[in-house]
Length: 320
Image (cartoon, rainbow, N blue to C red; front, top):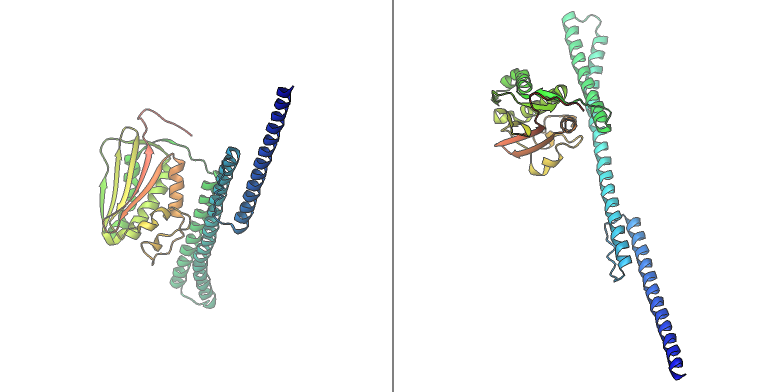
């Protein structure tokens, strides 16, 4: 009988102890959850980068805190991206407004001159009309760049990939710039192998990529007096380098060059005013061809844009 009573008393003590332990654990968990809630509210209200840093041996709470911190990290990353995008869009609108306002003001001025002088000589009228046409084409080119970038980023512009003869693409594009290179006092250093090299790409897209890169190299690198174009390949990839020996690009700007509306005059030539869309479009076109583009710059030594595309076998053709 005594043994039975002792057993019952022991069970009561154990049950009470278990209830106390559960109560204490529940109170601790409730306190921890309250602290998590308080910190979360403060982080959200202040948009701060504070971490939860809850010290507990409760494995469930530890997992919860880790998952919440992951969500906070992703939320903070998205907030930063949104802020950068918003800033980029504001700058883009400001640049486009400026780039539209300048030629439109010139066009308006020419029109007022023509209207104000009905007896103007035909040669002078034609000269002013030629300037009006030139400025109008500038506006059209700017708007086309803007809409092209919008289509590329939205995925609306599909680019078909075929086997392209890279030697011929390179030769054709450097020849198209021969007069500009010559008039700029630059020497062209062309390295294109005799053996045929094929890559998966799109000829129209590649022409635009070369136009953007070669024109940038001439504009910003003419003080280095050298323009280079190099074509190489290994078993799997084709690489094209467009380089110059001009002022170059500061290290802190290397990663920003391909951003929308980042204009190279900020880092290479402040006297040149551009829309800042050319290199962004170039990067999107290269990526649409399953390629990559990178930049390396040592001022007054060598500034190189490197494109890498998938190499194609001579007999194969692929479409996307």
